[in-house]
Image 1: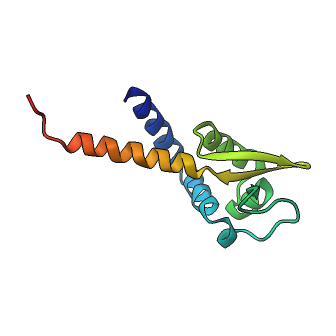
Image 2: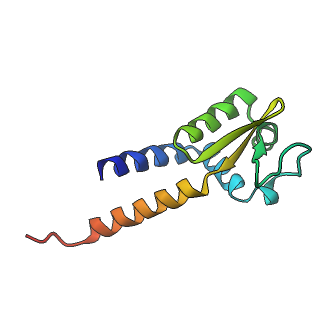
Length: 114
């Protein structure tokens, strides 16, 4: 369970930043938040970092830093197409984190049996 606590701590830290939380929300439904791209499908390949940068209104290095942080936790994956990097949400990681959190809350609410 220690490994799970560490994972959850990292994910909460990653999502504790309002910009990263927005990015994750947008990547959860990219067709609703971004225009179609010339290269790469929004869902299959992810969203070009340029579109994310433009939408959030921060500098490209700052956005790249946020995306790198999300990548380290496994919440997003990246893919290079030509000269651009595309990011997409890792639904598997979100599902894993959701299950771990649910189990943790369930365990924490059980009465101590001695």
